[in-house]
Structures are given as C-alpha cells and as structure tokens.
Length: 290
Image (cartoon, rainbow, N blue to C red):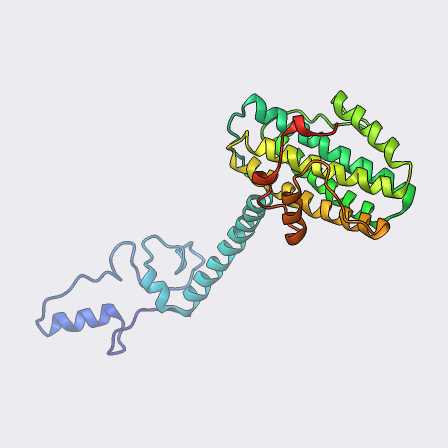
C-alpha cells in the first residue's frame, strides 16, 4: 500500500504544487519530489528503496503512514526489552553489594577495646551455654543467644576497621587473652557448685560487662563504636536484671550487686534499662572482683 502525504484538499503534494503554478502563485519547493524525498512507494524488484529504508526518509512521513508507525513502535519495544534487563541486573547488584565504608584510623586504646570486648562477649556466651547444659535453666540459653549477637556486632567492627579477630578459630571456652582464659575457668568452676552459684556468676559477668563498656565508651569518639557499645550496654543491663530476678526467686532475698553502686543498680532495676549508669558506677576495670 502506498503512503503518500496528502494535503487538506486530498491531492498528493506534486499535483497540488503543479496546480498552484498554473494559477500564477509562487511555487514552493517540492520536497517530496526532491532528491532523497521521493514519493513513498513499495519496494520493487529493481532494488528501489522501500518507504522505510530509503535515504532522506522523514519522521513526519513515517508518522503519516500506518505501516511506518507500527514499525517504529516495534523498534521502540525491542529497544526497551534490551535495556530493561540490563537496568534490572544493575539495580540488584547495587542493592545487594555492600558499599565501601570509610573506616577512620583508631587509637591503640580503641583497637584494644574492640578486641577485648569481642572476647568478653564470647566469654559470656560460652559460659552461659555451659551452665545451661548443666542446669537447663532457660535464662541461660536465652541470654547465650543474645551474647552470640553481641559477638557478631563486635566482629563487624573489627572487620570494618581492618583489625584481626582474636576469637577466630577458638573453640568454646578458649580465649586468646590469658586473663580472660583464667577468668572463664574460674567462673565455670564456681558455677558448677549449684544453680544459685551459676546465676550469681552470670550476674557478676553482666556487672563487669557494664563497667567495661562504660570504660571503653569513655575512650572513643567514633560514632559506629559508640553506637555498638551503647546497644551492648543496654542489653547487659537487661541481662543483669534477668539473672537477679532468678536469684531472688530461688533464695527469696533481694539481689545485692557486687560491683555496681546500690543506687546504680536500683535505677537499673526500676527501668530494666542500662541507660544512665555511668555516673552512678564506681571504679573501672580496677574495681572488678576478677
């Protein structure tokens, strides 16, 4: 089918131009008859250009031809089908690929604090898991799972700042820090005496954890480390209160803290949160029982 452009009079452009000349009006250039803009016609056997491949074919001519419009739409769809999958794959890679994080240099005290807290959280996890195997108290298994999460949080900080993991490849109950190793052995032996002793040992671990976190918080101004320490501090306060309640149920006596000031513990017991303990706590690492 031929797709000639037609004027409002319905006549093809060449015929309309000829009529205008006959009437004495100036003849406008006949673009349809000029080189590269011949009237649209079907392809022939002599190799003539088809309406949609010949040189000089204008987009407005194609828009006037229903066949050209269909072909143009099909080309657009084919282009979209090539581009959309590429964009989808790129978006998925960007969503699931971790962005490189800028890790500022740490001081020696900050680096040592991360390594120490990584193993101290491991000590709490391994000890509670061993005590659960001995007594089957749910409080030990529940808090051991929480300590595992704390270990992962500390590992994330170590990896972010390019520091080695002191707990890598260490079996349960073994530690790189000799002080923590001796402490674990002592606490486990004391916890094996009775269920009450096991709960008191666990409460002592949480009190110590709170003091150590407060100490390391005072030694850093790194935002990521501060957020993690504060989260762990709040969790340790909740753990301490859980162990204290178990002790009170077994003995009938009110729990008396060993390391925290009485006012600090009372504030903790009233809110079951570990916020605001720093001002009421006594001592730092030197004030521990171990």
